[in-house]
Length: 189
Ligand SMILES: [Zn+2]
Image 1 (spheres, rainbow, N blue to C red):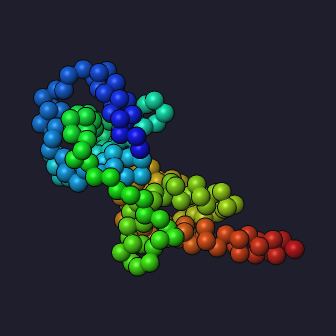
Image 2: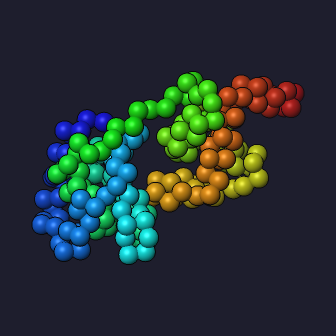
């Protein structure tokens, strides 16, 4: 991610919001675990009802905000505060390097990889090797609608319990797609 480009886009977005309100101000500079990871800028903050994960990413020229609080789909006061915090102090955001799948050699690295990659990314990859989300869902005994909801929860920083297991199942299918596709052909004969 180009940090200067991100700052410009965020600055533009904030000018639309006008000055920071009192509600926003109390969160500026209060973020922790500030990271730049997988094209997203994300951090945690203590809110009125516990800890929230707040993030944004560039979506073309737009900025796509998300927060795990109950109003945080596409933006909330935590998101605006994160944007201000990032503009003021982008150096405090740790750049998390991509964990490559091919580089995974132990369980800790596997955990890092599963944390880095999103289920959305993996489902896209699965589709590119010829297995649809519907086929994936049926094979593991769930529904495509459920997978969609798990994916959108992750995008909203709400992490479904067992998210890592879905990712692993998806990985197995990606790795074995050729074998699986061949078997389908055999059945058709
Ligand atoms: Zn929020």
